Length: 127
Length: 206
Image 1 (spheres, rainbow over the protein chains, first blue to last red):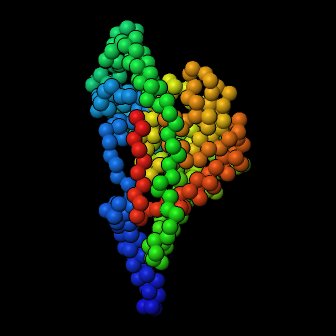
Image 2: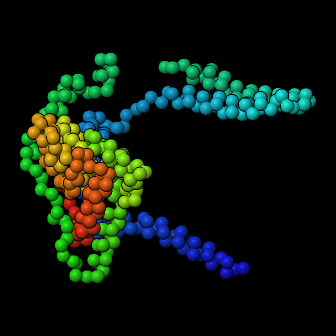
């Protein structure tokens, strides 16, 4: 039984040697000069599709849309959960229908708390 | 609209045009003579050792099989280049299926088509931003010599005016087979490169 673990040993050896080789070979090539290194100001400049950049790339972007996107995703996932529930609701017996309705009301209520919070925080207003 | 223009550009668009025109005229004045095709890094002699020669051959083989072209089409020849990248003339058979969108990751530039003087500074800049070692393939009659437009005021008469060209592929446009023939010639050239002794140095053109 123990000799079955021999393949595992080979696997471990390869798992250690292969990444080290991948990291080490470029370093060897770099320091032996096989990879040419001739940095200049144009090469280290910002890539702007060949145009000359007139500004740095470290600028602020407006991320306001992100709150809308998050709220939309929450609503989207909610509808994904509600659709199979609504499709199967008719087929249930009347005693099961009450439990099904209750559980969905609780589910929607939990999400509604989040929506009301976002609404009170004025997340839906575009500034 | 005027406010928006000011927000994006630190200068007006008229000033930008003047600066660009000066850049183009400067490049035209500097590139009146063709740059000789680079061949000094091709080794004609063997290293005199089995180990060195083997390592050199291995490195050359690895280099030739992993050429990554720059995703960069100028004119109608670019359509033949796209066809070459598509599934009928599958370019990945040559280890170069990934057309890189950034020059930092590319080591080969296919100049596919007519190059105008207005575009030339951008091409020079892209060539300079590519990782070394880098190779240039002139595809089509316009890139080789200016082609039909060789006497035009606006077209670069052969891209060897601004870049050191390794392989010329004639044709108007060349079929994907023609492009592959040029690629295989380039492979032969890369295989002969003296990787260990003669350090490959690609000049800055811009």
